[in-house]
Structure formats: C-alpha cells, structure tokens
Image (cartoon, rainbow, N blue to C red; front, top):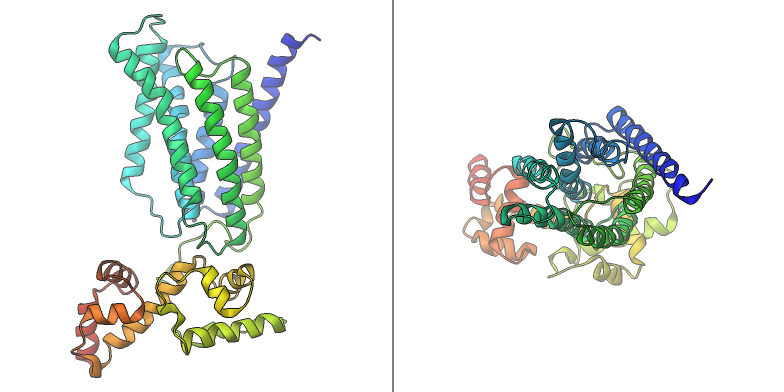
Length: 371
C-alpha cells in the first residue's frame, strides 16, 4: 500500500480513537464526578471536541448543506474558549462558572459560523475588507484563548498543594505551549485559517496524546484529589489553636508527626502566618523541612488545597477573635487586619465576607451585641 493511500486510513483511525476516548471520558465524568465544576465544564468540552474531530475529517468537511456545516465549525472554534474555562475551573479552587463564560463561548461560536458564511462558502480568492477581518479573527482568536489557557495552568502553581494537579499543570504548560505554537504556525500559513491534509491529521494525533494523558489522570481521580466537589456548606478554617492542626491519622509516621507538631508551634506560638509575603518555601525553611513534605502535610493531613487559602484562614481566625473581643472594641478594623498579616484593607474585607458572609464591621457589631 502506497503512502498516499495510507494517510486516509491513518487519519480515520486517529479520529476514531480520539472520539472513542472523548466519549468514554465524558461518560465516566458524568457517572462519577458530575458535581465538580471542572467536571461539568470538562464534559461539555469533551463532547464538543468529539464534534470537532468528526467535523474536520476529510469525509465530513465540505459535504452537506451550509446550515449543517456552519454550526459544526462554530463549535470547533468555540472549543478554544471551553479549554480556557476548563483550565480555570481545574486549577482555581475559587472558580465559579458565570454568565460571561457562556457569552464568550457563544460569541466565538458565532464567529465560526460567520467565518463559514462569509469566507468559506463564497470561495473567493480575493477577500473584501470584512471577509478579511473575519478570516484574521478566525486565525488569532483560538490562539489567544490557547495562550490564556496556558496562563491559567501556570497561575498559582507555587501555592498549589495538590501534587497530582501540580504535575498536570506542568503537562498542560508544556504540551499547551507546543500545541499552540504548532497550531498557530499552521493556521497562519493557511489561506483561510483552517487546517487541512496532513496538518489536520497531525492536529488530531497531538490532541489524542493530550486528551489521553488528561483522561488517564482524570479517570484515576481518588477522593476528589483533582476534581473538587463543592462543599454542601461553607467550610470554615480551623483556628490556629485548634487540634485540627494535629489531626490524628491511621499509622502515623513519626517524622510527619514531628513536622505537624513543629508546624503547629510555628503557627500558634510564633504566628508565622502574620509574616509578610509568606511562601511555601519560606515556611519550609522555618520548619527545616523539604517543600514537598510541607506541601504534602498541609494538603493530605490538614485538607487544604492552596497555600494562600491555608494562611489566610489562620489570619481570618485571628481577626475574627479580635473583632469579637470586647477589650478590643475601639481598635480600628484596619489595625486588626494588619496585625493578622493582611497587607491592606481591601483583600481583608473581601476574604472576610467570603468566609463569614458579613463585613468585619457587621461581624464585630453582631458579636459584641451578643456578648
């Protein structure tokens, strides 16, 4: 069998494998993790990627009426937005799916439909100004959202305490960068910004590698390690003096016990959480322990997924106790916030209200009225 005859068969095999993997992963997420924000976005992304994989195949592309092909192209272009939202939902524990995400996705889908209507269907070699603008947008908007997805994967990497998620960040950063550069080069070299021929098959192969790796990790999730299910009630931060900092576990490791005790001492006696710009590295230096052990202790033993959230929880606990103390009634809220380790009043107010549902002033008034 000659080379040219092999390519269609290889392309069909790649697309078939990719679609099967996408549908399998989506089915598993629906069954096991449908309550997790990242899972909900991921399910939609997986299904839309299956549509893109089939729509861009040589057998499907260019066939059928325009009203049938246009939505498929729109969905394919919109996948860049879905991947960006997926990265945000996966790596940001405070992520909330909002109307602006849906509006952005619909706008980019509409761009894909418009591209098909004004650029692909007319099949003109010389494009008018409006057609040229749509074609340029078609090239660059998916690239822009791919870059945003890579940025989302890299953000808060230093403060992420979930080891499996940290490794996944590195994979998306590396493969996302390679895929974005490859895709950008191919689209810029194309007359209409679309992939065709062997480049389309290569795009499918790279997607198969990326989706396969992501699916392997997602399908092996245990106890919500990666895909966070929102709590049914707001989770309150354990006070610095609480025994939660030394919660017993089965078959405790002596070295871990010593590290947990030292962490509790550093937080309760030295109030290390008040330190300006405290990082996991500086805390590990205080504890004279490797970063990975401190990260694992805070994540797996204490149940925190983000270092900044852990530290801010301790700061907020101190602030809550100060605001509820009648002896500190006249102390300004700003002073209490600074004493707890916050650098300014704005972040303190936002974090305080997110945890308690009240502003610091409202909280103080309520607590002192009850005392």
